[in-house]
Image 1: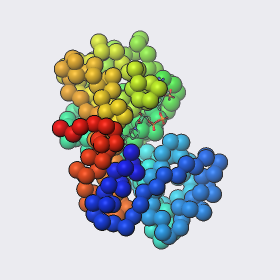
Image 2: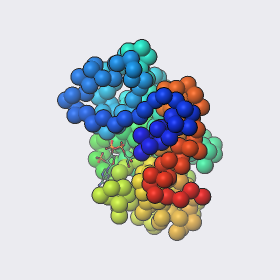
Image 3: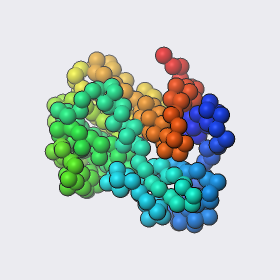
Image 4: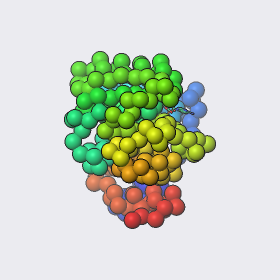
Length: 269
Ligand SMILES: NC(=O)c1ccc[n+]([C@@H]2O[C@H](COP(=O)([O-])OP(=O)(O)OC[C@H]3O[C@@H](n4cnc5c(N)ncnc54)[C@H](OP(=O)(O)O)[C@@H]3O)[C@@H](O)[C@H]2O)c1
């Protein structure tokens, strides 16, 4: 989806740039950075699973937010020197602040503790009142909660518990619910991190999954009357922020969104 949206943006602004996909084995990452990414004709890159964390050791500089998150999804090549950024955080927070509003009094629950959750969790922890993380693998959820709590800029009370029915009681108290797991996409299409009974009409539900744009979680929440937002906007906003880092130009967001929606086979309304 990133190639589709960025190439549409490059065409719109008549930039002589091309976004290409490269598949890189974990054992080949260092070699790839040296032999390809550092070439001066390569303006930058996005980084995705499983390289978002391991890429840090190959970069010359990492911006503050990305180093706090411990993951990079965007690289800019400045004359052979590589600087890393994390635009997932910025993308998710922009979605929430635009769609929900002020986050300072919010009680948030987040499902997941992987790469997306690290970025979203960091952004939330510096803004909301409480953040509770539910993760299938408890140790991973606890580690994320502990790391966020230790940061001097953390404003929230951050806690974690396993993602299972026995622990989901506090979900109903939440103002905002975020799915940062891969439940709802690909082979997990029919799955949801939480049953409908835990969602209330006052819960704001944000699913980071963008394909499909309407996941089972969002359908359940809509039926209950809750406000919802899909991961498509996060995809757009993280991409727009990367575009700005690479080109220093304002991203043509409408063109980028249309390219995503066309590619997903969705009609824009
Ligand atoms: N919209 C956007 O721009 C954007 C950007 C980045 C990511 N995302 C989305 O974020 C989601 C997570 O991506 P990621 O990069 O964070 O992946 P990741 O690092 O692999 O993390 C996956 C997370 O999902 C959980 N999980 C996976 N399968 C599960 C299952 N069957 N039951 C319960 N939990 C399960 C994992 O729990 P364990 O720790 O127990 O394994 C982990 O918390 C994906 O859906 C991706 O599309 C969206």
